[in-house]
Image 1 (cartoon, rainbow, N blue to C red):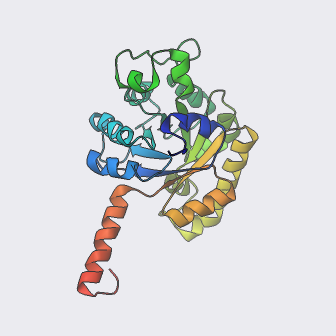
Image 2: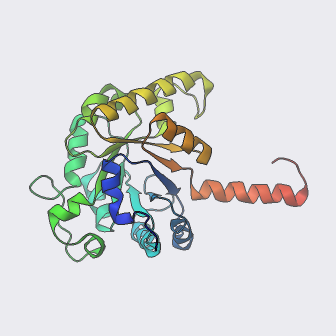
Image 3: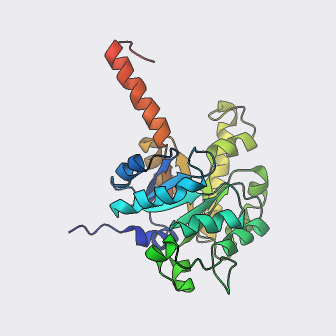
Length: 262
């Protein structure tokens, strides 16, 4: 019998700042998501902001993740809108990742949207999918749900310490592409902004550690995931299904035609 932690332990593990590895889903493909969710990643992040998987597909994605019973389902919502946060959590997501958060005031609003009365503003869903997975006692539901905000703008960096100190916040998460742009990069990976990005990552990690919360980052591959964990990030999300689909198809085309490189 496996002794690996189950998806229901995700929020507690994140709060303990255990090393966690996730995978990113951008495609509205429940069958593919179900396959990936059986591989053993600690969580599966579903992109409701930039992917082609919009709100009607969130619940199908969570059903696909839960079908394997191994990974926790996480949804990145489109914005800090409390309504979107509530909808995502009602699907049974174990956490939300909230983009474009720029201040401690915004962070407090987001945290409250993840929690029920008396500490928050989340509406008690009743007989929706979250009840099947998380129960119907508000305080117990709140314990099982993690609130994660993204640090990806200059304003967020300016208010970083106050954001990390927000009561009830479980983690911050770096969007390196947007953060690079905020630091002057002309494109993601621009070497002119590389040093500024690395310095910002150290600041973010240190602020999270001082405030006792987890700190995550999105990476391009497993090698970079291991590197960032070794540097002190507590959770990392690897690439995406749409990226890997293209990479695999291109590699097979090269092999079939003997082209050497694409």
